Length: 301
Image 1: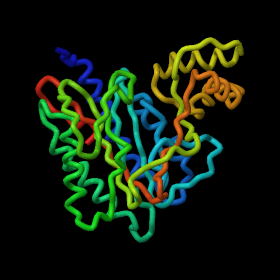
Image 2: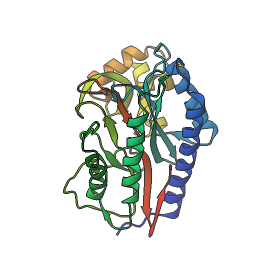
Image 3: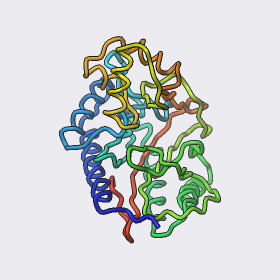
Image 4: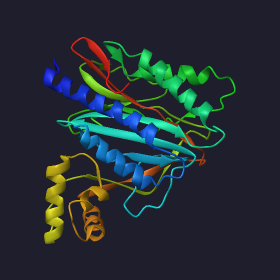
């Protein structure tokens, strides 16, 4: 049976402590009208200052965009409406994954949705115990939604939590946010619980690429600059997602051309933005949990 090593547990916990600080930092930092790129740059800098590394580019998804958007240096979009801040911190490759939603409207338009999202995550957190089954999370989430007889809000069923691994954001197991029959026992594992709430129909579609890339497979390329970029991606990110602004800071040229070429060859993949099907606003609140060696830790809460 797999037993998590103390060094692994310590890395998960340290990553979570840094992520908690980043959540506080982000809440204090973000104001309506700020450029998303300025928010991203400041969060990137803070993660490194605190001794962490990037698990993935910070997602700054507005309104009906549920996930998978990070700004480039040329992005002119500003913080407004309902902003999801999805934060990933790695320590020695072990990951903390958490998210907050911030209502940037003057009249608190999204306060009720965010409060429900917090309640949903809270009830799911209460369900976490030694030798629990993955389906227990879905039951807890669905119970909260069904307490509202009017059903003003819905859980996005196609977005889910997931197990975490060394340098792996999605380490193989899905943890659904609705009633299901997944009886897999969660023990000696790190995982994220990640409910998304919407006032829309509760489904998503894939939109335009959102600026987040991942190495999909190894491959050989002839172009010299492409080889240099690919080798850097392999060594620096170790299989974790990355973004253009990190490559630009290394001084690489022709990034647009090279990345398009690597995507066309199937070596890289660029995640599409995930957009609520009825284009209604989406909130997201997420924490990482660790069940290991007979104990339970919410590393990011």
